[in-house]
Image (cartoon, rainbow, N blue to C red):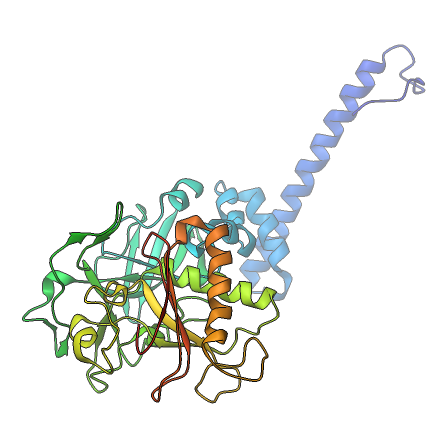
Length: 371
């Protein structure tokens, strides 16, 4: 604090002394205030008067009395929001992280949190905790919370999915669910490989509605065969879901409501890709088998068919082209998500649709039948 140039009465010959005395008095006053505040809150807690302890007073008291107060204050919704972007994807709308059991979740998250932070995972009655920020050791869909000191805060709308190892597949099956077998690993274009998946998401009737992102659920990517066999096992690449969300955002920005997004075909097992439904037009190495392709259409009126997106009074392949135009704009803005995009006319089994994938190089085509 600084005094004005005019000398204070009683300190005419020593203004420095006046400043020192005033500073000492201020410090003593603040200390007494802190002690009084803490004593009052402690008494209220001891007496069970919960009404006297508001969130604000609790936070202030913690900040004054708890050596790890910075950790407690850290666990706010706003603070956790700044941790989310790496896991939320380029669209900012992803709600899960998919990985092998026991592998590191996110180094950026681990580096951002203060020392002593612990990740706590829960799935039904199962729970695991780790200070090393690795995924749970068991396959499943896990909610995630962060614990720092005595405070714990869940990450809203976010889950970690750990995979069932592909090594557990026997005779082309996991349990009763028939998957089939992938071709041996092979290379495509430079930087693009076709590797058999290392693990599968286990989907049950209870978890099939898990949100992968704002607009997509696990069940959207299920193959259309073996309807009564549970659990099912699928592969989903979250880069694809991220790209889908960016396409929907682009459509919205161009006046098209994306709420009626439908997935005509998501993941396909090798056996389904070879023979399920109408296999005409399907590639033997379809990206659908590797979890990074889907066929989509917009159906806001609920009739099960593509809407008239270009408003020309007809529903045809030109409406699928409207989605492809959005894909083109997204890929220009997000090169890491470049891939294939095909447009398909309607058949007796379905209306027109657009194929989207993240194969790693640009590809465009016009097709018929299934992609």
